Amino acid sequence: MPAQRAREMSFERTVPRTLVHRASVNEVFVTDGSPVGPGRALIAAQWPRTHALFHPCDRGHSDPLLLVETFRQAGIYAAHRYNEVPLGHHFVFCDLDIDIVDPSALKTGGLPLQVILDGTYALDPDKPVTPHRSQARFTAEVEVAGRPCARISGGLIVLSPRAYRALRARRPGRDAPEAALPPEAAPVAAALVGRTDPQNVLLSVLPDAPRGEFLLRLDPDHAGYFEHACDHVPGVALIEAFRQAAHLTAQQRTGGPVLLSTATIAFDRYAELEAPVTFTLEEPAPPRPDGHRSRLTATQGGTAVGHADLVHIPAPGASA
Image (cartoon, rainbow, N blue to C red; front, top):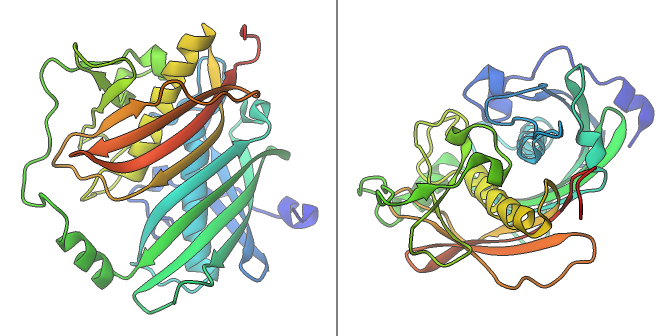
């Protein structure tokens, strides 16, 4: 990361919300950008000390979902600002790889954290670029308060409004009401999934469900998961549901608090709002020497919508 250019980045105000696809100014974290080479740019962001959704854990570490959301905003900003993607185009994130190399860098303090992403937006050379569709990968090295923290990479498809409308017009159940959870489905306790607010819990369990099987509980009026209107289950909600299921599993195995270390997530198709989504834990997950591994599949109507492989490590001071 170019050190001098990073020091020149501004954290004085956020960028226009349209450049990061947010409805609320309060939900914009990106503050500045500077191109440093073909397809490459430094992007600055500021993280709040606390947030209604992205709340620090009880050990004071920033929510990993905040890291994911900042990466999402940075990729969209880089595409619009430096890679000629017109405003109004839709971004479909297909996969995500997260490697948190220094969890202690996520520790909150007395001031908002300053974040720099050294990001590269690269078009897929094997996919044609048209006015209505392109495919790319955005990769970023992340520094928090000047400390290397993480590496994140995500594949995405960019669609024009016309192409997106055509894609979504074919979705199943588009005229059906939104899915309701069975009344006997009980929400998982917030502390078990690394949350403090029960409203942010995304998992429920049926009384007769096998161990490691969860239902997605998603309020379409939730201001965090549905920050703007969406005609499908938001990707951030699926990512967070995967994380919550893996967190619960790792915490049960360790008997103490845990932190996310790595995650590999792939989406096979959209998850629709009109049918339940089930998350199933693969047992036993192949071992990892560096932490507690959880592999999960999300299904809807018997069809896989996504897969995840996550590793959690004991939080500092916790027993292994």
